[in-house]
Image (cartoon, rainbow over all chains, first blue to last red; front, side):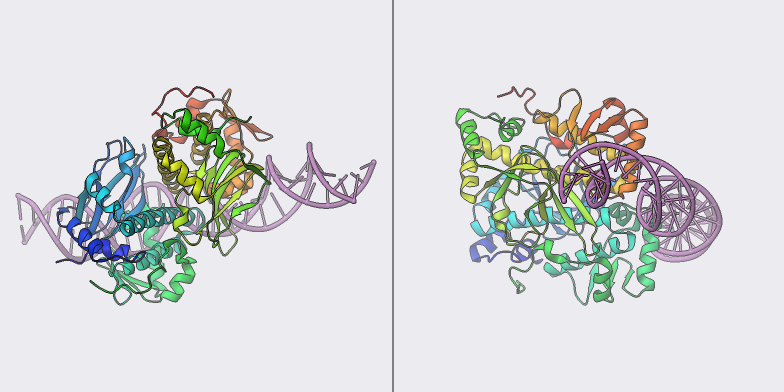
Length: 243
Length: 243
DNA sequence: GGGCTGCGCTAACCTATGTTAAGGTGAAAG
DNA sequence: CTTTCACCTTAACATAGGTTAGCGCAGCCC
């Protein structure tokens, strides 16, 4: 059975006991596979389930009148979205897959069941707050940093986030995104995104081919990015033994 | 006594009964005045109280190593920040005043008291979600829009938000910010901020003098901005009678 | 096998925005 | 009354990043 990325993630924040872990395992049993570039829910719709990503990359995004798209968040394995979404009666943005994904739809009742377990509840709330912090950091990133440090920052963040759920080995992770999608994330054009990636490669900070991203020199990449991981609030539990 | 901006705001989302209103009134009795440009809490500190703004403008912001500042949110009268902040053990950003402010510090116990009233709790949760939606919209704004529509968008948002708490009359509101602060909000330089404001004035879309902003032509300002207020989720209760 | 199509890459050119510098005004301070 | 200081304003110049266009390659369909 696939590792439970949700419990892996929550254990970055909280200790979970056997019962918690069993509940989390049961919750992810009904997976569905969603193709790339498919909406899980679209702007304007009434939210129904909470979505949990177990594999692949999904995102939040908005499309403007003129067709420009801004990707506002990546959802990677272990990420759960919109814990409290039931309160709203229409989505003000869309949620869609970027790559092929394994998704779990959590109906309201199941969410409430999870929130009944104190440590799971705290973990989920904390990870919601981390999502918000991440959003704020993205705003800073786009508002203040020039293109190259901006991209470097994103790559550092993904390294940290994916590592926290065990998806990094050897400073390498899968980045199943096209340059157009990266550009729409960073608020720049695909042409410029390409220029930046070339430059990062030329400086031997990263390598990226066929969706495999390797951080070749994390020290320098981080300093280029002005990287400070405090907003991920990951220091709580140092060790996270594999399942 | 000053109007209770918190209950005004919550009544945009939920119906509140007499007991709710009385509780909200009692909660805002211990106000303190904070001078402009003072931190309510700084990055790295352990959060203690939840802060409520009753008058003036405050903001969330971060400062980068090189001294650049990004303002990530405005807190205007009625805004409450970080309902769940007690969960975190250090702030990943700062909270500070922009103008002179009236602030209420809500200790944990008072917050819990508020959350005990179901309609207040739902209202607070909803307004937290609106804050998040606003943050996402700011990301889109900075990521995708050019300077002039970007500023126009901010001014439209403030018109809507301040109107929802009764602080707009005659398409006019108080904007107690310098052009430097506006620039730090919009991810641009003060010089360019000035150019944009001049241009909006020349087009007779706004007037702005001594911190009074008037929207002269909201139709055209909104179309310039690509304005869509759906993310404020304000349509719930149409009427909001004054206290 | 030939033609699409999506994606990465590059070049030449253009423009929105940043940079630097300096003058003007009004309010506060001495 | 004079000085100072914060803020607004404008101008001249510099550049990061946008725009447009085109090539090459790999995978896929017929």
